[in-house]
Length: 101
Image (tube, rainbow, N blue to C red; front, side, top):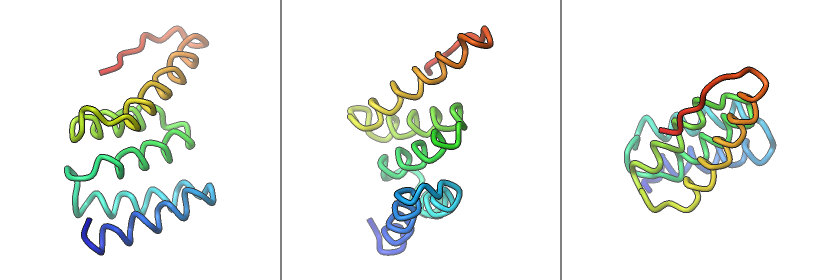
């Protein structure tokens, strides 16, 4: 990971740990602007922040992108499963149909 990407990710994780999801997203997005298709973990971090903000569809897209980069990513698979369950539970209240792709 180059230094600038690493700095953005470190700052994003700091804000994520403080539950400041909006600022965390700013730094994860900045890192992804530099290296959008190289580090699946950044997509997972971004997805986790979005999930905390109840941006479930966007979070799912992030986990799918992480899996495109690294198909055997345990973290991305775990968080994708978790967000799909969250979306499914929400759909039970609204009657929506869920797609996991």
